[in-house]
Every structure is written in structure tokens, then in C-alpha cells.
Image (tube, rainbow, N blue to C red; front, side, top):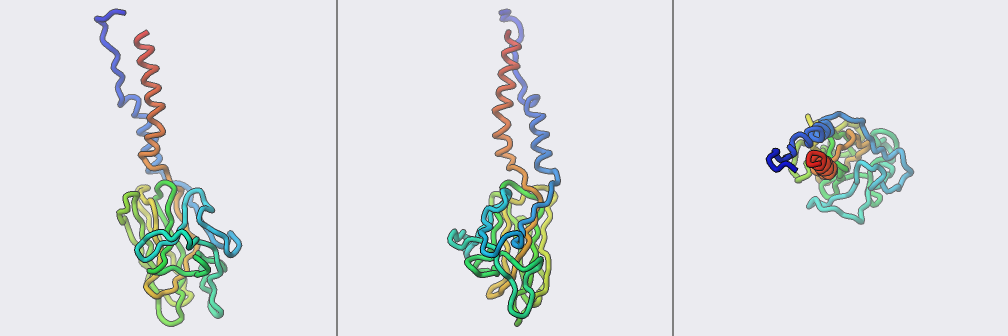
Length: 219
């Protein structure tokens, strides 16, 4: 081999550029809307992992998961008023068809999404109720909040948050202290993989390509 010839130094940017474009497209593209609808399942069905795109769980007042309080579908109506925004079933936990500051509904997305919405119904015949939809990134930083107007008994409203890019890792939904808000029809855009996970999956292919190029240059 001619040692005077310049050595082959593969440029990482050449190999990473196509993958960077894939990564950019994955994190900015708008996707289909996924809906988790309690009415699609018999009452009492565990909804924890009915969708591969999200895990549903109950949080306590300290925002800690309560594994025993599995999120299920359940009847949301009262004896005299329709309290189910999109049918007859709502999100529930241990037979309780409402979420408030003591027990919150969390949606933990498999990746990151750019929009989240959920239907809400006031659940008390005595006073208007207020619901909150909070969205967080993967580090637990609060990104945005949507708060309902004071909502009457059986009056429906949709809470929603839309972001300019897919950075929502989880959502937390609940009504106020000592309130009985019903929640239904969780909808979100299809989550995309975390950039770190996608890059980790692509790097072995990049390294293999670089080795092949180097071997050909040295032949």
C-alpha cells in the first residue's frame, strides 16, 4: 500500500445527514389522530394498555401512580342527567367515574405527540366545575395547560392543547377539589419516537456504512 496516499477519514456528517433528515421528519410531521374511547369497550374493561400508543394510569394527590386504581370504562350517567360526553361510558377507576385533585387521570404516551384533547362533563348538580388538561415533556416540565370554563351539571366541553412540534410525553387530566368531572374520548396525534431512541436505532447502521466505506478505500 502506498503510505504517501492520504488516509481515508470518513466524514460523520455525510453519513449522519440522511438520518438527521429522517429524525427531523419524524419529530415535525403531523400524523393520524388516535382516540381512546371508553364506549368502544364493555363497562369495567381495563384501559391501561388498550392502545399501543399510550398507557393510562391513576395518579394520587402527589402525582404518584396508584397501580391498584386501574383505569377502566364505566357508566358516567347519574340517575337524572347524562354525564357522558360521547356516549354512555367514561374513564373511571375502581368503579369511580370521575377524576379530581385526589385522583388524576394520566396518559403516558409511547413517544411524543403534538396535540391532546379530551371531552369533559360537569358532574355536580350543586356548583359549576372546572377541569384541567396539563401536558408535560419527557423531563417532566409543564409545557401547556388548558382549563375549562366553569361547567354546569351535564354540560360538555372539550379541553385541548396543540403544540408546534411533537414534544408532549404525557398528559394529566382532572377536575377541581371535591368535584366530580367526567372525562371521555381521549384523542391525540400518533406519537413519534423519542429523538434519542430513534438516533440510537440508526447509529449502528451508520457505523456499519462507515466501516464498509473505509474498507473499500483501503482495498
